[in-house]
Length: 330
Image (cartoon, rainbow, N blue to C red; front, side):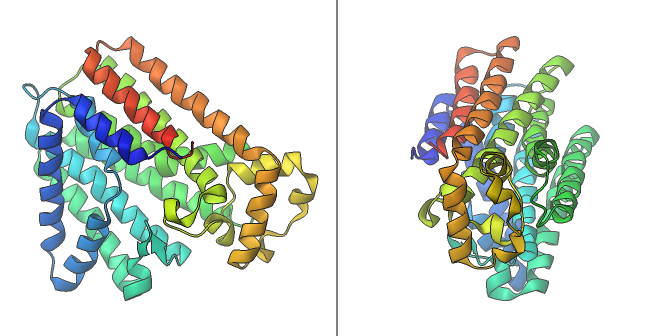
C-alpha cells in the first residue's frame, strides 16, 4: 500500500514555498483555538486536533487559492482552519454515535472521557470554526461552510436511518457519501477560490473537483474498512459492519453472492464476526469493483481541471491531491 503521507509531502513540495508557510500558520492557529476554552475542553480539543491526519482539507483550501500575492490572506487562513475544525468536530461526534474506541490508532475522547465531554468537545470545535470564519468578514464563506455542515448533519441522519438495512441501494449510499464527506471537500475548494477572488466559473470548477475527490475518498475509505489492517486504518477491520453501516463493498457483494443478501446484519456483533463477513465480501471481488468506481470519479475530477487556467505547478499539485486519495487503498 502506497503511503498517502508521501503523496501529501510531494504536494506541499510541488505547490510552492508559500504553501508550507501557510500550512504552518494554520497549524499554529488550530493549536491556539484548542487552548482557549478551559483546561478540560482544551485538553480534549487539543488532543483531537493534534491527532492530526494529513490536513488534506486545509491543503485543498490553500491550493484552490494559490495566489500568495492576491486575495484575502486573513480569510484564506481562517477558512483553512475552519474546515479542519469542522472535520475534527464531526469525527468526535461520529465516535460518540459509533461508540468507537480508536481513531487514527489513538483512544477517542468518548472512550477516555465519556459521552458528555466528547459531545461538548465536538460542539466546541464546530463553534470555533464558525467564529473563526465569521471574524474574517466574508458572508459568502460562512454560507459555504454552513451548507457543508448542514449536509454533514443530513448525511449522518440518513446513515442512521439506513443502519442494519442490507437492501440499501447504491444511489442512496452515494448520496449519503456526498452529504457526509464530499460536501466538505467541495467547501474547502470553494473557500480557497473565494479567498483568492477567483471568478464564478473558476469557483464552480474547483468546487466540483473537491466534491469528486471527496466522494472517491469516502468510497475508498469504505473499501479500507473491509480490507485494511488496523495498523493502516487506525481502527478495527469491519468497524462499519459492527455499527450497522452498509457501504458500497457490501452492496456490491450481495449482488455477486446471493447468500450475503440473506444475512441479518444485527448478527454481526463481534470483531470475529465482522472479520469473517469482510473476508466473504472480499472473496466476491466487490472491492475491485468499488475501487474501479472510485478511480473513475478521481479521473473525472482530474479531467475537470483541464477547463481551468491554472499554471503547471498548481495543476500538478491538485492532480497529486487526487492521486493521494487513491494511494490510500492501492
